[in-house]
Image (cartoon, rainbow, N blue to C red):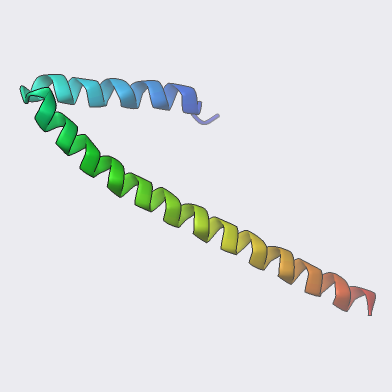
Length: 72
């Protein structure tokens, strides 16, 4: 069984908080860093979402073509 996402999220948040706390950087600097990281992650998430949607639509079209060929 794979580790549940809730556990992975909790562990990741803790690791990120630990890194921020141990960095010694002021919150204003951490905020700038986190904004940059968020922008990169958001762009990757948007790209992944678009790619998954395109792959799903392609699969549906291919399955539809296969069904038509089987019924012909």
